Each structure stands twice: as structure tokens, then as C-alpha cells.
Length: 163
Image (cartoon, rainbow, N blue to C red):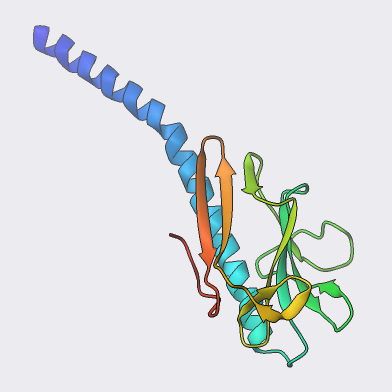
């Protein structure tokens, strides 16, 4: 009888530990999924830039206030929205699926508005000065609760990775 009680107590303790860690596990999975989507979309913008003419640049425009980012193409005068692969929501009614909204609870850390811009060689360049390459790597961080994950866009090559 004592053995049965001991086993039940152990099962209860193990169950409490599992339930306590399940929330952290779900949060981590949400962050991993979103950082992978962001990484994929950054690489997509870079590929589009490398397949464009000398004057075209593509960017991922980050808007922290809207908790979203948008794919845009420079047409020589302004940036125009373009469809992101895998998006299925037309948020502004223009017929394009250009914006990825982050799920509730996940935020982008950093400036209120920023852009990751690529020239036709796939090199990350300065916002507003498309001929000047970045002098440092670009870091983007996603945060949910107390947990965060970041990715890095390498200067000169544009290689995007999760450290």
C-alpha cells in the first residue's frame, strides 16, 4: 500500500513540473516559428533584389506600432508593397498579401520603424542611401513575455541566421 501511495505522489510531482514547464515550451515554440518566418521573408527580399535590375532594391519594412512587417520594392522614386509568400490576408484591401502580422503577445524589439534593405547584389544597404553598405551586422529581436529570440543579417553578404 505504501508503494502505491509513493508512486501516486511521484506521479503528482512529475505532473506539476510538466504543467509548469508547458507554458515556457509553448512560448519558445511560438518564437521559433515566428523567427523562422521572418528569416525566410528576409531571404525572399534578398533573392528578389538579386534577381532585379541595378536600380531596384527590395526591403522588409518593420512597423513596431502595427506589430507587423511588409515586403516592399523600390521603383526609383518610392517603395511599393509587394506580396509576401505564404501570406493569406489582405489587410489594406489592395489585393496584395504583403504584410505579416505577428501573433498576439509577440513583439519586435527595437526602433519604432526600420527597414532591412538589399541592393541588386543582395548586400544589406543603408535605408535612404541604397549605395552604402552597412558597416555592421543587423540584429532583429522578437520577444514574448520574458523570452526573446534574435536573428542576424550579416553585413556584406546578407546571410541571415539565428545565433
